[in-house]
Length: 383
Image (cartoon, rainbow, N blue to C red; front, side, top):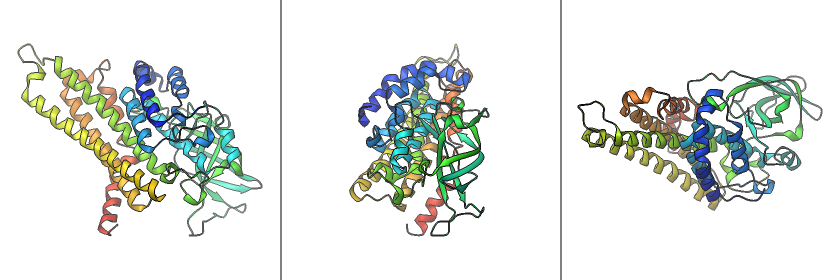
């Protein structure tokens, strides 16, 4: 596949947004991305946005990745969430054995997904054996390969440890056909992500299909993107998804205000000073959140390209900006939802699903209130 520059991916995202919007009801109903949406994402190279160029990926800047997700999220949050998850998972290619990476990502339909860290794998000759079940596998229903982050046990069952004494954790990768998927994602929001559980039994993982995730010394690629690591990329990507959902919800409320009369005796919403003021303040809140998130990402990327370093200060700044942006986006969605009144509760109108999706996003790890405590602790300590 030819290289797809970042701006081109953003334009392509805008171009296929109408298709995704038309499919959104079916995505919600079936709790899966539809075949036509998955095909469009593959055809346009979106799943390969963060894949190294040496493997046929686009390897775009983090800002272009965020803009791509933001545009997709305006059409459907579940699609954007799956795309963000699988795109960031592909960053592990920068740490893999090159032949293994080629085997996994050798064609456009190659999609990798994984869930939360859990369980152990036992070292055996030539690799590892694992029996386990993992949760929160967003995008697993489209994936050709699955991964998991596991603690490593020696052949005798003793935990293996890194030089600093911490448990050794590796990312293991295996074909999706090796796993059993369990349909468990019955959620109030992001219903179409198919964030199901997956399970393997006594599965052998060759050494070459394992890697240390987000360990700079283990990188085989030199691009600045891979210095950021998957944790920060997830945070920035999912915060951008929240901005897209908030933008679409507020736009829907503004469109409604232009036309709606709350009652036969009331004037149009567009002529109501309170409504006008609320729209103005909410628009300001959304623009401020977007500006803050992108300014943080741009400053981090500039420093990273200049120095090659992604340090604790950058990590803290990204965490704060992403968490705050998700919380601000949630407030924007709530305001737009309440502004719409009874109109918002009907499934035929563009409010209630986005309301549910936004609140599902706000419950994810990237939006935890404890991130404020971590950042505050660093600030107090002088970091």
